[in-house]
Image (tube, rainbow, N blue to C red):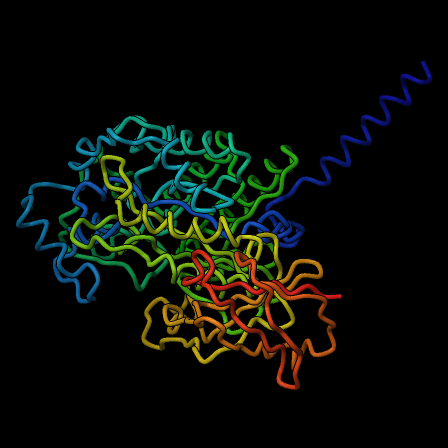
Length: 503
């Protein structure tokens, strides 16, 4: 009997400890969450996709649902969508009319995840919901979802299952904090936080009927906040993502709801004994608990904490049938090296077509990225920044006229990186000097870090990944002088990697 009582007391104490360990929706408590777990810092590259109702017209970008109602848009991007919609479909066709036309008849989660994995992504995901209010999972909170309408597919579930089969990390992206401001509204008709991105008309063309109220955001502020949280809770409980990526504008949601989301997410992860990631794009979450996200950007130097950036694989985030271009895989590799050298993680976003096909040009870009990473990924994955990020003449600059500066950072120069630029990473006693392009046969390069911050480090050997040639090298007052091989290694026109082993 005594032993039984002791056992029950132990269980009770364990229960109390567990309860105390649970996160509560208060900032100081939530900050106990580690923003960037090791798996995220190791991964370096992830991928997801923008896919939704907006892919049916496939014009402009994923903001089509807004721009088709914005008759006096003054900004360049999306300016022509209103006229395009009028001429192509007529003013009596609304955004919800595209939903039954989105059939996704060629969609294959396996095929897509195969492509993403072969590209070298270590975490893979799907858009869960964009600003337009259409969810890509089976939702009870939102009747406007891809399982009940349109393609009749639970996209989040299918992608998640494929990703988890491969022991990769699963991400979902949420852009729905801006939903309350996305569609044009009646002047002064909603008591909501002020947004410089709002569009108001006395008589907006957006449908006002009650059956479309939730889709078009014709809701009260309280209802919008409740729906925002309800959607997140559904995905957390049903699909258990390792990373919930957050777009800008989540700050429009009432603070208590934001804190409750984090508590729910972190507690669910704790129950499953796993580490999860959430990012902040702006200041809607504290950076103590969320990874900073910079859109299509880099930072000036090595950041003390892990950060994340995302880039388009296609011409825009959402598929545009009139702009069939893709990211140059060589430039993608160089930007990846730049990001990783400064303690960052890079995400690429694919832009599939409505029927479920990823455009050929994006597929080729992914194949090119994967070909390089398959050979030289050891210089990227599981690495950490060296004592300096790199060297070279290409300067990274901020564009003061960029309207998204609040959500981004340094962009100018990213696509100009070349063989005169070097980026460093390290793993244990190995340093990788990644030369961002082929310098030419037998070309000499001075790795300047070994003449200053790393001058006291003793070098055991130097080799070039992908080459059997013995590499000439010597330390000088200026740094480590290395000579490129006579023959260019495979894929080294994107970047050449020197492997430096320290004593």
